[in-house]
Image 1: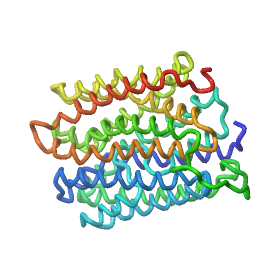
Image 2: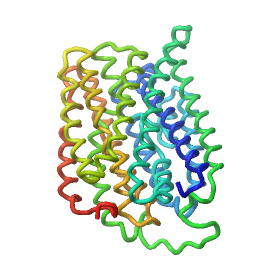
Image 3: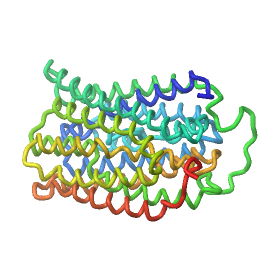
Image 4: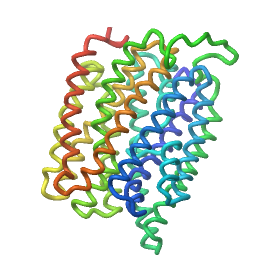
Amino acid sequence: MPAPSADFRLLFASRMLRLFACGFLAVVLALYLSALGFSEARIGLLLTLTFLGDAAISLWLSTRADRWGRRRTLLLGAALVVLGGAGMAATDNFLLLAAAATIGVISPTGSEVGPFLAVEQACLAHVTGDRERTRIFARYHVAGFTMSALGAAGGGALARALQDAGWSAVASYRALFWLYAGVGAVLALLSRRLSPAVEARAPGERTGPVVSLFGLRESRGIVLRLGGLFSVDAFAGGFIVQSFLAYWFHKKFGADIASLGAIFFGANLLSGLSALAAAPLARRIGLVNTMVGTHLPSNILLMLVPLMPTLGGAVAMLLARHAIAQMDVPTRQSYVNAVVPAAERSAANGVTGTARQLGAALAPVLAGPLLGSPALASAPFFICGGLKILYDLALWRNFRALKPPEEK
């Protein structure tokens, strides 16, 4: 890599540590809120507030990161992780929990929240050639999802061990939130060690006036169109966030916390490893074709999950889905960074990422009551799969002709 190797290692280490924490938090989040006595509707409302808060913070920070400084933005994001984890652990008051979830950086999905992804992807694209960009993004994705898988398994096992040692369910879950806050402190240390080479501009270089909303100029039309489509995809995904999936498996099949950790360890591990195949496939058929061609069949598999009569069958469908569902992620991220100017990458990542978070924010408040109804508990799977299929078709129709530099 042309960038200092220390920066490259720090970016990957930050990603891995962060996703490990997101993995263990997502498994216990809905269970924690349920153990506190909140209804499914209130749990859905709090998760929606979490998505909305993450979206607002991500947009505000990422669209300013290239001007303020990428290292400074990552440091502020780490401080919000500390705030979110400590706030969730310190109280059982719903209003205070909602405030902590909204202002802090909390992940209900097991995947990225906050400004980190947008800024780190801009850093990686800044120092990577066009032909290597998708491969690097795939490895970045694998690193994160592997650690998310380990986090899901580790968090479930730790909560189970604490409960077996005599801790209450609430106390065992709170311990994981305190651990999450500690991860935020380590992220702050890693951000401080990054060198000026990761910045969009050299130290002391003056920036011109911002002449466009969200820091976008040349790429505004492309980014807003992509953001609109991504929000539909994320809205669909919000019906089956990992916290809700864990809750559904627990209610329908009686899966305990240790089993849930093992299930999502396997799912996240497959999601991460599948990204390794994304780069060579994209080199053969193109980024957009890879995104759509792998996403469509995964949505069919998702809709088969609630049709399985046993826990083993449902888990098998879920794992098969995760084996291909995330192949569109590194290709999507690479595509966004390829079709916008280098000086607008953090902003473009931030806007498209925020569009996804806003889309995802609307779904849990609708999915929560569905999960609380025995007759409708499986409806989120079909809503999610159907909407994602429509997204795939619209993406291919609108962007198959817009090629990244390496495909021209």
